[in-house]
Image 1: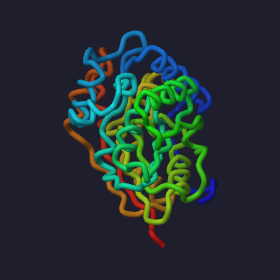
Image 2: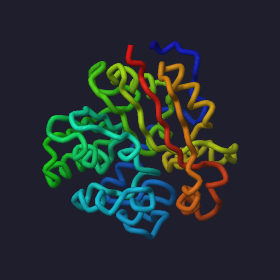
Image 3: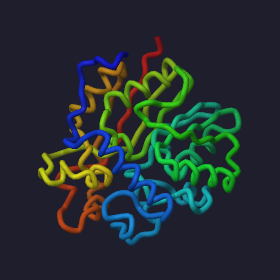
Image 4: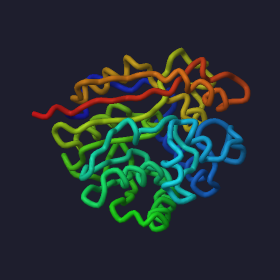
Length: 275
């Protein structure tokens, strides 16, 4: 697929450079201060729950939480893509927006020493933190690379599974993200991500606010738009399923308005044709 595909990303109404700067600044603060990502601010995260409790709310098991050393789980995300992906021993996995590495370390356990996991994040502080966490978790089959998910630092057709947790919504060019994921996947490979989707038009002041984009809200796209982007990238078997039970934690993202009226967490699955 080339960059002149017909599908465009109209989800955000701010300058892409400004959007990336806002996201990089927010997540750099999160890496430094171990704050929660979605809603609130770096100094005052929106949820009082500890990261482990938040992970359980998102669908991670006690075994998942206990399997990873403290420091990798930063309370990020809006679901559990590692459960969705159904990884096999020996799989090569790519995580888009890997943060502190929590999902990467869980994936590393699933694929074993014969498999590998590469996490890509555009925030230097996050990559540094994730690499430190890799040493703490003795994760020899996991590595972290600095890069943008619109320009993945991986070779063509080198991974079996692409995962991501509430990160694609942050991109100002989602069609390119999906094209890059498609490029990286081997034939027959699969995409399995958790993200937020738009269910109603956002207020103008939220949609044009860089901080709202960085807080996993204003960059969300409607399901039909995401389906079109994935199909245009070449994916087949696209299935996007909203999670109604996500309303409980999305309500915590903003003290002034109920954001669950506008966005909901969803699972997004697709496959690259085998031939």
